Each structure stands twice: as C-alpha cells, then as structure tokens.
Image (cartoon, rainbow, N blue to C red):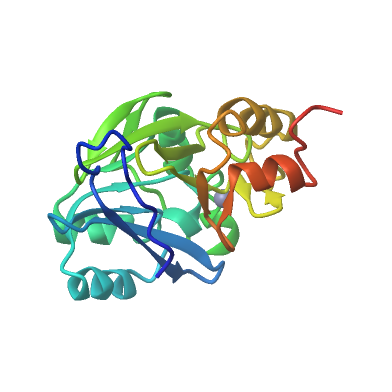
Length: 230
Ligand SMILES: [Zn+2]
C-alpha cells in the first residue's frame, strides 16, 4: 500500500473524505493499476485496469470495495485490457477523455495489433471533457486533458487530497513515450508545463509506471521537461 494522503481542509470543520490508494501491478508492461477507496463508505474506483483481471477482481473482493466506476488515463492496451471484464462483473461505467474513444476503438492506436496476435478494441467507454469535475466514491476529481503520449491522454486530479494520477504523461524523472501513433513531444511538453506544473508543488503524482513522485520534484529534476523552456 502507498502512503495515505491526508485530506485535512484546515478550516477546523472536520476533514474531507479519507481515502486509501492502492497500487496493483498489472500486465507484462508492469502498469500501475490504482484503486482509490473511500475509507468511510468502502466505495471506490479503479484507474487503468491494464490486464490481470482476476488479480484485480480478487483485490476488490478482499478489500470489499464497492466499485462505482473505472477511469482510463488513455487507451493503450496495458491501461485498459481488464476494463471490459470488470465493467461486466460490477456493472459500472468506464470513462476516458472524449478524444481517446477513437484510440480505444482502433487496434493500431491502442497497440493491440502490435503486441497481441489479434487486435482488440474497447468501445464501451464514455467520453469526458477537459476540465470536467465530478465526484467519484465521494471524492472530488477533475479531468485534465494532457495530450502528447496519445491524443486523448488525460490525468485525474484530486484537489482535496493533493493527488494526481498521471498515466503515461509524467513519470518519476521521466515522461511518456511520444513515438506511438498520435504522439507528439511538443504537445506532451506543453501539456506537462501548462496543466501539471501549474498544480501545487506538494501534489503527489501516482504514475502509470514506476514509483510515485511530486509535482515539485519533477519541476526541479525532470530531465525531459524542465519547468521553463530552454
Ligand atoms: Zn501508454
């Protein structure tokens, strides 16, 4: 389990929804699938169920997660291959940025034609717009469209908890690959500078691969996207 971000409003009127964030390592690409659980209600949601559906389902049962939704940061296979099964099991909606719907529905863009014997498409997702704010399992979430790794790639920001799920946009000391279909280094750099580096420095970043970091750490130390353009 990862450290639990404290959610103190600081106004003395009690605390925001307490959450636990769990990371489950899935797929041959070692993707971080995250489960966010509201500790008061046991409701929870999943981000990027990339594969190993049995492992994820087992985890949800063990923690008695009342699943409310599935969110995808983007449509690459290692972030969505278990979505169909979990959606069917729990009867919950799957969301992504609206631009990514076409990536999910295209075996070339979602990379299944490259890494699997047969291509796979996922067409049951619902699209959200940039800046969309919503409540998931009692937690405030804002979608930030951060294209560059894929055209409809996005991050999910939990402002009251100081947490960002960055998918394959930003990693600890690294950034997402821009060589896949629809990728662009210029676009990715702009997304990171304008949408992510403008968040509070103490924001904890849970990335799609590898260890967590913070916005401040990456602004100071990321070798690929420095805070100011050079
Ligand atoms: Zn990816």
